[in-house]
Length: 414
Ligand SMILES: *Cc1c(COP(=O)(O)O)cnc(C)c1O
Ligand SMILES: [Zn+2]
Image (cartoon, rainbow, N blue to C red; front, side, top):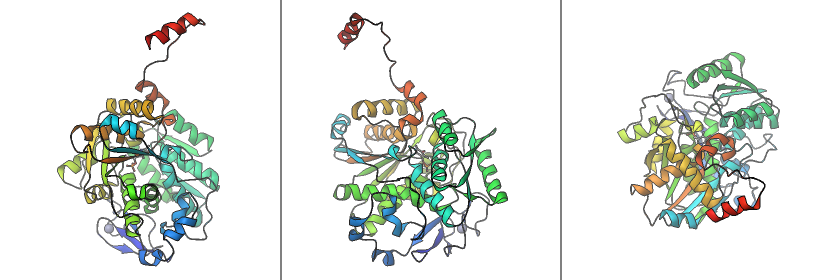
């Protein structure tokens, strides 16, 4: 692949030629913190094709960015549509919150209902391109359900390792897409290492974001799209939930690349938001550190219930490079943000999908985000992924008899 210069280790800086390593930095070894690699492109070369003319002609999916994705130009692409989710301008709720403007990029509308589709789409395509027929991941839910969907589309066999507690809708997706689901009776960490061992033993392609550098390239497409969609109106802030840290780092890479190509001339600041029950990256940010203290994760936002994040280096560097900030929020704030956003905009996110909204409200409250500033929230998962949490977030429905008088009573209450 001429477009890729190589894969650079974020820990030791060593650059590996494309094709030499698949996953993490051999020099850093396979003990934590292993060196996560970052794909580097020949941007000057790619600028000859990837320019405004290209973008004019390109299709509205993540494949419009093929010149800066780690997939060969002749690769077989999935037929499942992925990408180009809408960015909606929501001035009414911005006014309610006392900020200049508010946008939502609704990645809950991706094919299996979460941001993870961007990563799985690229990961599964790469697996096929490399000649694998089997792929695996360990996940708390969305990564798994999106991998199962793209595997079904591409005809890959998928082995999915999940802890036994994932929300029902996500497990339903795994089953309906006919992946082999392994409900591990152990912690997420144990499931994670078991998946690594199995991938090595059986020769499967490993889709775990924490070790596979092509996944974050999929995630960056959200930032690439948002940059194009907002163009001259790049927001002051982008808010997003942080679990492993791969999503926020990917979004940042997308914006940075678009600035490099001259599509935008300003970069946003990142507002990274963690749930208080799973906030090791937030704590490292506060301490001005890159090292983490792993913890037990306890939050209803299952998609970011990560006690031992793996992509903190990329995430923290992105947040710092952007001049951004982090906040952490309680589960109650997440539920109330879910209801607040839904009732005022018609946009329904799963708990992790609206954690960034809860964080934004905090950041407005503590003066981090100013009244004259604009914000883009990347909504990372559909509310239908976790109906139980949604039911907790809002009042119960009214039960009435088959009588107009009962209706009248409800109407009178307003
Ligand atoms: C995975 C996920 C996130 C966080 O992504 P990380 O890369 O783990 O930081 C946020 N929201 C949703 C819905 C997710 O599935
Ligand atoms: Zn290294």
